[in-house]
Length: 328
Image (cartoon, rainbow, N blue to C red):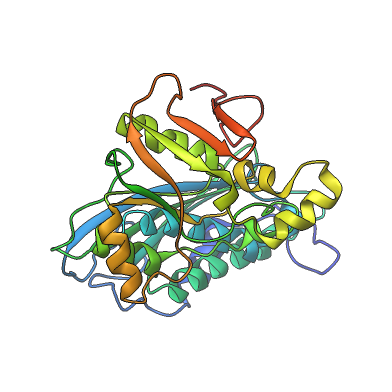
């Protein structure tokens, strides 16, 4: 079948065989113990507990085609590594599944996909992991990139989880939030790997990354733990991008900080004495207290927003935060 070239001379369709041959020419990951190009990667071993997570990055949902393949590939890996950060895991390896239509009018699709794979590889390498395997599939529908990340925690570290917040603890946030979408910061999230490892070692018991909005993710953490989180809104630090977004959105910077999502900062809960020791060690850079964990208070719900103007229970819905299914 003949191919119609795009204006820059690249093929308008992509070929699995061509991409396989191109991949075979790339550098060999040091973590591979088995052969390159096999459908399954045989990896060298590592110390500690293995941690696995999978995430997807879909055209029209997480990125637009015009952002370019490299940006899409990087985001797909970085947002998955953020899930590892929320378990206090250090990245080791990633795999990439690529699903794309045969062609997209006016787009040099094979070049776009090569850029996506290269972007994914580079993003993994920057955070100590390697792209070791993957899959290619031709589908009807938008481009989708599925990443599985493998990491490891120290064998002496007590695992954290979203269901382990305890009454009496402090609630921490690792950095400023809000405004990631209009600024395009969402395309280049920063996995807070070192911050996650450090706070877990200091005694944090519960942790999540802020992907669907600070309020929504805090609500989920509190619900999973069976507690009430009281969030002091004046302690939230809106990102400068939230300030910029507020200038034209009709919303406040705080509202952007609470609800925008795709910030990929970390939230954690920790005992007050452990937090004090962490600060004395000078390791708390970026982390700050934004609230407290209390025994479940049904009048307050799982999340109560507290400000000098008053207190209110926060509930999912009303277009606040990201919820793909629309339910609780």
